[in-house]
Image (cartoon, rainbow, N blue to C red; front, side, top):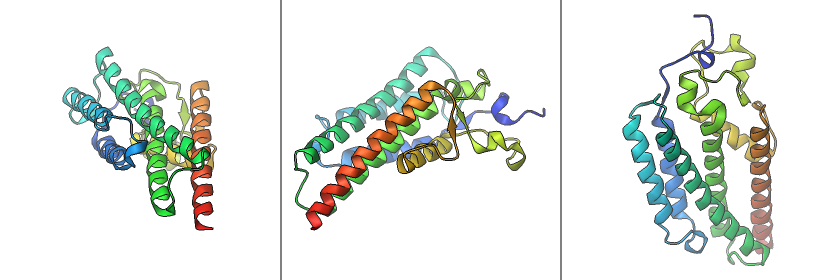
Length: 220
């Protein structure tokens, strides 16, 4: 009764926030320039929507049900989103490295910003899916040792007893890591978490540096 929520079984995380963010992800994927998209352009977004629909049917409101097939579908969804983002980011970096990418700074910044934001969402999904076994495993408190330490875990007197990490917390973690290029107030503990954050920082740094450099070159 005295344990914080992240250490005991709970009702599970509500699906609303991850649904909204996944919708934004699909829109961003379809909105980037056609030559930066994986072809056929609707294949991966349609696969992501289909997989998410299956997951919603299994856990309509709160994510509590654990099953090997559901776990496979959820990871496949993240892999599909990651591949689409990696393809767009790779194409953008390749074009910029060769001195291409457009003669107008504004479309370049818009497309670069969209790819950077999809990268933030994709890594948030990875953190959310793997920290302590994923949202369903966290709801059952099956794993006690966290992969990420949030501020509320180190200072429980400043948080509600019912606080537990949810998708928006992992989205914040991903955003701050992509902007600061290092951990901020959330620390990685496991090796996979450290390596993933390092990988994300590297991708973000290269993308931002090339896009800004090209935009400045166009302005001047």
